[in-house]
Image (cartoon, rainbow, N blue to C red; front, top):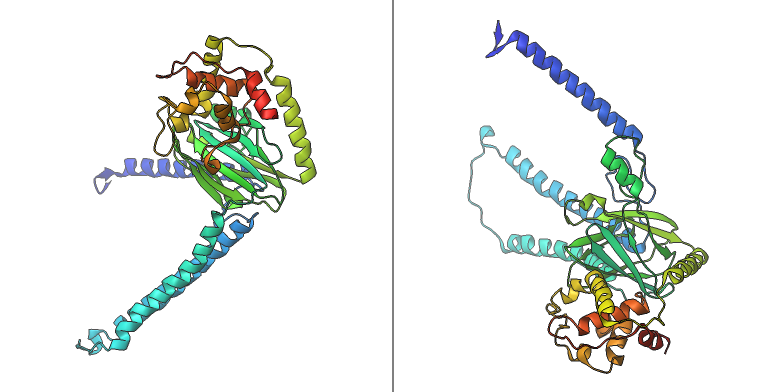
Length: 398
């Protein structure tokens, strides 16, 4: 006996195989569910809604989300309710016949004006939130965030902590778990970074984003913040966290094979804790800093500058030094080639054009001297000039 074209014995075997697969899949799913719990500051199990808001902007976004959802649902139910009622009530099977009706002016005006007013009613609160999201003025702290495959660079460029800089990567223990493919997964699996961004609670933090290689996107859902990081461009956003804790995000722009390994951790602490952290970071940096009194030779300084340029400058000014769009070229630049080094040092320390060219005080005196020397002796420049770290130190302290 056959079932269709499949022999009954084979059909039974297929059924047993499917049943076994379902049981196995159910067990695996259950294991994942039991092994993972809600992550404060991060995603929750079976989460359907937006995460709890930690900033005023995130709260406004949540309100706007529900306002739009409810309004659209009411419109959907009203329009389709009237339509389906009319179809049912005036169906042909109960004797109704189609007829042509005059179209009065008030009907024409009604279905033009009412949707227009609805769109305006949706646009006004949305515009208010959008404008607030982009108001980065009067920040207490400014942090430059640089996306790199597959890590984040953080440089504190204004406010308490100015000069601190570090790279944040996926916690090595989580990478080891991912490579192994086995073992219990913590609630913050693939969301824990080795060096979190630390900010004080209740202070406005401006975040300037760019990238060194491909497009990335810096997002922390609890803050209501998402800003693309684009090579050759500078974008900014802001947040003011109102609650202490650790908050999680990820790169949300597909950026290569290890896109899933670019977590974002922001640790929000009290003002006193933040000051203590800043002091500790500066002491650690001082212990590792180059001696600015060292006198360098041209070849060694250019070699050091090439590394600094590739890590911090090439994203905007390009590897060729030609710039792009509004980004000025360094190749052939009068400022770069000027025998008086004061102006180019000032540009590197303090920036230009209201932050379009950010200041790089986060770099050491030696790194700034090296990258200037590199620019003076690369591409078609070949000036033979060099800037010693002592000159940068003097300008910084002036």
